[in-house]
Length: 376
Image (cartoon, rainbow, N blue to C red; front, side, top):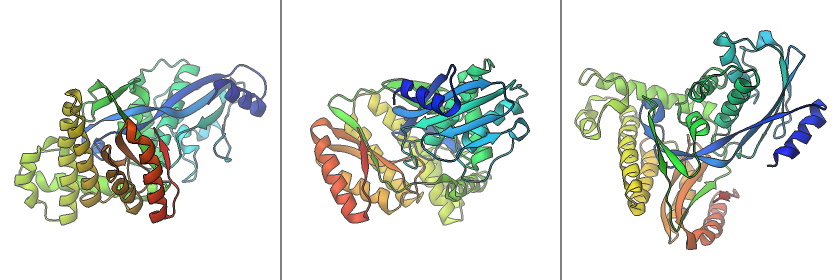
């Protein structure tokens, strides 16, 4: 997207005057799924596509919101800044972020006009919502001179998702959008928020994202259900080992205590989380050592666990991954994001990328009736 073109769109909608523009990236998670709200490790990287926010302060009291991607527009008066709109309204994401400033007692001294534009495919599981929240937080913080640190803005964006979108997400998506760095992935401890920027050295290998075009929706209740099940697992283990999150128990400890969890479904949910945390730490070590083949096998194990124990994949994601793994030159393939639709991420050798896109795309479409999209 060209920022000058976006500024012209803003002026066409709101009139002449200075316009400030901001950008936040989407993200893809290489490994470490559904571990963030359990205090575990994740390994996402920011993407080159994301969400733009164009903003101008006005003499009005109200905020106006519009998007080049969606038709719905809203005019919000200050007294309504902390009240969510109807469920499903995209403006809840930036409005929920603005509400966090108000709740901190920061005075928004005037109105503003906001125009949003994004090239993160909506529903692809690449964190279009987190990018929208983070870019709003950065734009408001800068425009009104609040001077908050970037990490604080990331936390506020997460709160917006909890309170206005109704998704009890972990910190990963907003953190990756707000703290990502070019050519690096983020090895993040979601409990302490300590992190390591790990160079992504993929000589002769590309990261290929496969959008199933089966949109995921984290506000459907299934995501929050998994959060509740993980909390139930913690309560079942607590009498035998005093933990507050599943990240506080090692894989070896879990194997000794898993029978203390009476509910088989809850047990399987916990098995995924604890094993995924181990896979993630192992994967980062292998990547640093240059062992891409082992990294790929851990990606495969991650998807299998998400499919069998966490049950968040579904036919489209499983089909995409199955077809990907048949291609010579694919090192590893898994779903990425919250699941229930969305995207896969695969490590593919350079010479196999074109065949991957053509063959996986053809076979996937034949089996699901959906036409996928690929991003290298």
